[in-house]
Image 1 (cartoon, rainbow, N blue to C red):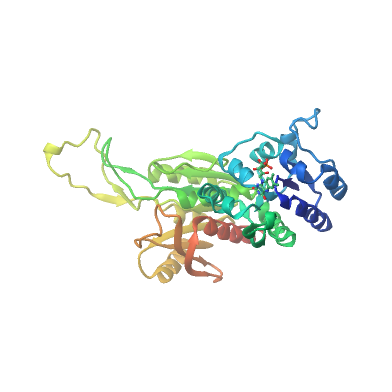
Image 2: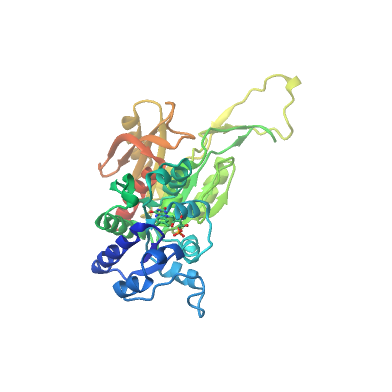
Length: 390
Ligand SMILES: Cc1cc2nc3c(=O)[nH]c(=O)nc-3n(C[C@H](O)[C@H](O)[C@H](O)COP(=O)(O)O)c2cc1C
C-alpha cells in the first residue's frame, strides 16, 4: 500500500501510522513531498517501513517511478494531507512524485487532512474536499483539538487508529468486484417524433454514472450504456452511446452476454411514437396526433432469460413506493430493485440525493431513506458483490 506524507507538522504522526499499518500486515511504501521531508527525515520512514522512501519523480532512474508505484498500490492513503495536496488532487495537478502517482493510480484513496482552522474552513478547501468526496475519495477527519502554534480548533489530524480503520475498510471494499463484468445503463432515451423532436424525460445519468464509477473503482470491467443529453460520464468504463429504447435494448443484450450483473439505472421511455415522420412536422399543419406504443421492456427480457446474472432494476415512483416496487421486482424476476421517490423537490432526477429503498428478492431490504447517489451506488455494489460471492 502507498502512504503519502505531505508537509504539515502532523507528519510526525505518520510515523505511528506506518507502524500501525506494518503491524496490520501491510507492505507500506512511503512517498513524501519535499515539504514533508523538512518535517520528518525520510530515513525515519525507511527504518519504520523497511523500504526505501521516495520523494522525487527521478528517484529510481531504471523505472517510470510514479507509474510503477501507482500500479503496485492496492490502496493509497495521504496522511497528513495538506490543503495544498487536497487542492492538487481535486484539479489533477501532478507536479511531484506523490501527486503524479495518485493521478495515475486506480486504487481506493483515503485522505486525512490536517491544517489550521482557517485553511480548513476556506471555501476553496471546502470545495476541494467536496470534489474529492464526490469522486469516492474517503476523507478521515480532521478532528477538533490542539493545533500547532498553540492554537485550538478543527483541523487536527485524525488519530492513526482511525486512519488505519478507514484504510482497512477501503482495502476490503477496494477490489471486491475485480474480475467481474458489469453492464450499467444510465440516462434517458429519446423516442423520435420527427427528425428534430422527441419524447424524452429528465434523467441526467447521474445515478447510473455513480454505480458505474463505484463498480469500476472496485475492480469491475464495466460497460456503460448511456442515453443522450446526460452530464459527463465517468472516466474508465467502456462507453456505448445510444438514443432510443430499441437501441438501448440491442446494446444491453449484446453487452449482457457473459456479464455477471446488469444494473438498469437508465430511465428508458415506456412509450414511443408509433410512426416517426420522415420530415419535420410543420406548425402550419396544426397539432399532430401522436399515437404511442410500448417500447421493449429490457429488464423483463433479461429477467426471463436469467442465466445466473445478477439483475438490478430502478423504479421511479411518486406513491406507494415499497408496494409498487415489490410487485415490479417479482414480475420482472429481479434480484434487487431500487425504488426512488420522484416528484419531490431535492430528490430524484438531476439532484445529488435520492429518497430511495433497496428491495431484494430475498427480503433483505434497505428501508426508505435519504442517500447521496454515491452512497446508494456503494450500497448496491456491496449487495452485488455479496450476491456474486454466493
Ligand atoms: C511550520 C509549518 C507548518 C505547516 N503546517 C501545515 C499544515 O498542518 N497543513 C497544511 O495544509 N499546510 C501546512 N503548512 C504549509 C505547507 O507546508 C505548504 O502549503 C506546502 O506547500 C505544502 O506542500 P505539500 O502539500 O507538497 O506537502 C505548514 C508550513 C509550515 C512552514
